[in-house]
Length: 191
Image 1 (cartoon, rainbow, N blue to C red):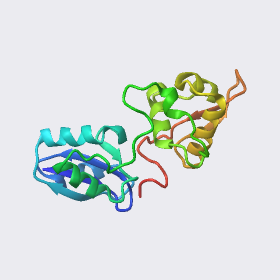
Image 2 (cartoon, helix red, strand yellow):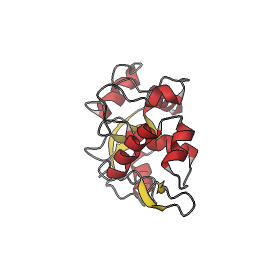
Image 3 (spheres, rainbow, N blue to C red):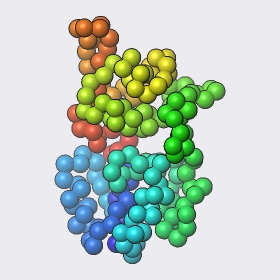
């Protein structure tokens, strides 16, 4: 069975395959602070699961978890994708497949720290600094962004609980940032 598991009111969902989605739900619920539910299930196999993962790949948060919060109804987006290609259900991502990161993060006209794509930013940081501490300057170098752009992203990520300002570096005097201790806990996003 293909399933969609998540929390009511959250756009973050897990799209997967299991013989028994409710048994899978019990496994996922352990250690998860948000109350998870099986939002939808449908007959299907690993091939259909792969199709769905490919359809929503640009909205992947981690593993089989996807941010479909921009769709009017994340479950409906998956339901339609089961029977079609699923295009036009979500806004186009900022980054085209194969494009350089620089093109993906340039702030658009009128874009402010309140509208930047924090999920994309924190995923990129996780790739470059897995579980580690970093400075704004280091993030700017790795993501090929200006320090001004990085600071907009960092301010928004800190305000939403996606990053934590740790302390000042004794060596450089710069602020040190890191993801929260639990990488799956994003205040205001889940639960």
